[in-house]
Image 1 (cartoon, rainbow, N blue to C red):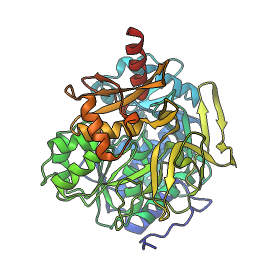
Image 2: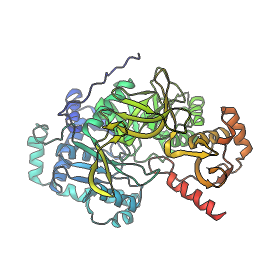
Image 3: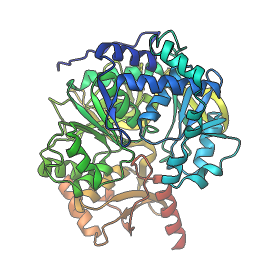
Length: 525
């Protein structure tokens, strides 16, 4: 058994994000630095409380209790304070993906019945999103700049004379089993869904991760993953906030050249990201840039072995691979610092109950079903706006079918074989498209690769490999497959050169777009 500094206990029934924030504030003091962002170098816990109370009171004037209020904001302290403030006043932020485009945003607003959307004129202008937001229908836009101007003298008196002195009495916070946020799935394989996460789920997941990884009180987190992404919200923002450690919020993970320099300047020790982002950071970073990093965790997509090896040899850093889903707030498993097993996603977190159900046609593993305190309350779908679809699987109510094919070894390490939807049936054999991509990464480690499928009259399905390596050949792929001990049937017969793979704002490959490209290429032949 590995020792943990913070044994996991389930959240109390009366806990919420806001009440936990007050507990941490009392524990560490109002003067303790909590975070910094691109606008201000340091915000204390006391400053965050003041901003949260003000924004919560203002939001309560334009919304009803338990209403879903859209939030379209970047990684800034004010965005976190909107989340905490709404929680304090019984409102539920629906964190919208500003990289998704008008149609996806419209679908999200319809699914979660968002009637009011809070954003910022400055942000929309800088991100060139004015046209995207202006095209939304049946949604009232409220600009943060205008909202702040509505904070009158009575509000200021309430804040200074009462709320800051008695922050628990001045609010009406939510409870553990109430919804805390609505997030939206990435849509990497279909239409995005609204995922309703309770206060219990988010708090439990923070505590589960703290039980699995021993973070010291002196850690400095660097958080560039967007808050609309569950990994960015829970691991990047709530985890350091509720641990009493400092963090720096950066507005985008896509600044591959700037981020290594910022990590060096802030002497960051903890970094969360995706394999895609880590591959790009490594291209521009020097060993000195990452010298302060102690814990680097890859999630959201499978960690490419070439990326792991680059970080190991260039920076002397062993990447920890984790695994999760938006529906589980999001972390389900992570490698322990003192017992890293490369090629696995580590142990399931404490409190997670799992069953692996065999699947016809698959020689290894089965489909992972889970339940636990970090599981979502349910889905909102565009087809039934506002109707909560509670989690259930073939194992019964309260279970969630992850759709991932996994194998759990005798030591409890979880091996991800692939997603059920990302397998191809070639000549009767089930081939994981992630295995195909692993072969490509072995053959051309400095390029990007994505696999899709098309129909094949003779073989059932055919695998199409999209690659940014213009000189990649099937012969090189065959050599790579042999080196990995994989069969020839896993080597695609069709290779399509592409200048850049389509990527979602969360850093995942956009497989919907990739599949459309494969279908279009097949139709053209």
